[in-house]
Image (tube, rainbow, N blue to C red; front, side):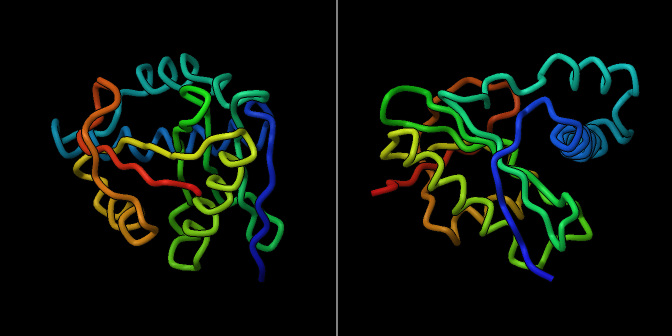
Length: 163
């Protein structure tokens, strides 16, 4: 089986299903860690609907979908914060697809998309409990930086020059 990665409209059925899977996983992980319970279903629906991903639409953003053997497996989003800085977001692979090299391919494809948007630097934020994500970013050359945002769940910030 092989990986393919291509841009996808943020509001396509495939993108919506992957967003739901991503948000459910990271939200449940946070609530289980901090409150010992999964996300309340009503809250989950409200938050998924509140963040559809319009910021990942062209001309200032891209949503990439990874497929493994033709089946949707994950996403990565890129959006310009300014004319030279892009933000990496929504990096996700279905659990059963992990360990097959797809995450690194997604991040590299997102870096290329950021370059195409004119960015010379990529930044991202993540949580402390997402240790796998932090290890991936470090392995791909991202370095911890000072905060660039005040997101409620942002605990670690990374950056990388794209040139």
